[in-house]
Image (cartoon, rainbow over all chains, first blue to last red; front, top):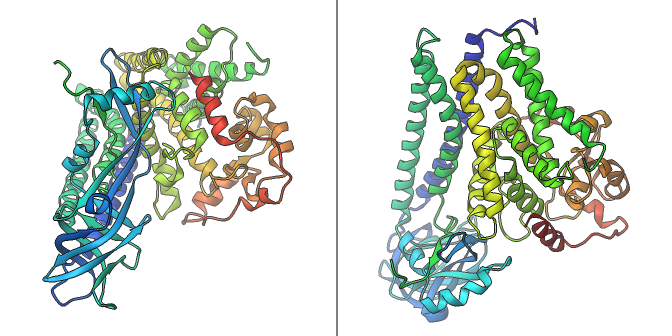
Length: 284
Length: 304
């Protein structure tokens, strides 16, 4: 039996089975990401003027106890190395990012709420992409020239990209509101999460969830499409062969698409920054 | 060749290429036996990639580079990718704060079997994206040239075979190629899941069956391979007995990979819990082992 030539129809069904198992796994992994975002979004219930408990506060930073009167910061340590090529470009790789609350106060729903100083994995500081890009941008030609010597070495040029939340900033804060002192304070939620965000986290989660669902639908539709082509009778037809070839391409490409979606859905506190420096003011 | 034992690896690759060629050109070879053999040999081909990219088989650099090209076709991925992904990143886990592109934590299904099947879908793209970023750095021009040659040959030859006979190539060349490539990625999960990658001697799971290791060119001895990456694979069994056994948690010295896989992924639905496996080395006698940052620096210098 094992030396009898395998019918191509059977092999075709086998590889289609592998394609579908793999596709469904990629879809399931994407669904987990969407579900996690949606579960977090459900917790972002605005706390009203007299409410306490765990939820979302929307206000303005009135006091920041950190450097430059900042309330909090998202810090991404990076190492930059010189890229190949004639033009000097420094390419940055991330190290694990950290969020830190320096302490301060916000005005929300007509009341002052204290934000405690806190660091640790539960502290998430969110910014929009423009704020992080601005924080990561090369400040001057002198800064670029100063970075180059280390960037040429194996150890690279180390730096920390810091995006702060300053006084006066509109803030979305998620945590557990406690009224156990003179002034209400925002503590981490039961799972340790304290979110301080300059962007509306509800909109972020909704937008990313929509992207995720679009991805799921697209992947399943493409898988169905290549399957239909591959099964087009007769199996020796050009259409069927095209389906086979496209099925192979789909199998190879759905994997990076899945990790691409994972990266696209990452919360701002965990998203990759990377980036590069080119010497400002260079001639085009 | 640098070492007599390398005939085993050359034999594996020759057998693999022979089986692939048989299936392409001899219709009666397109059967379960040959296909299963091709899949198994494809996995062994990726094991040879691992060994060869740590220490080239031949004295001649040119031959070593040429052999990489042959291996790349066998796995449908450029063998040189192992240098940044395996030798540099994976061997140092997350010591320098950078995530291991193939860390077990990249998968998190509750049904553990899905983690095993899905793992290459994540580790693969992580790896190739990471290799692409690594290759953009100045000083890696030789790597980039070799990497490109390997890609052109691997994908070009496979593409030519697809044009020659799309279904035969898809079923009897691509299936084994992708099977081997995905299995070598899965090995990262099998060898490191629920180990303590911050420890010196309990960061890996070993599979110590003698027959298994003969076929696998001693790739079952994974702890000692991480700690003494410069040691030739033929010396790993003795080094494992001498250095690892006194210091490793007994659960990380598995007698059989097949039984481990059945036990961990088929006969139990959930992922095993984390245990403090590093306790074993705390009570064992000290041995000379360079700090991990020194070993990392040596590996980076060797790869330059």
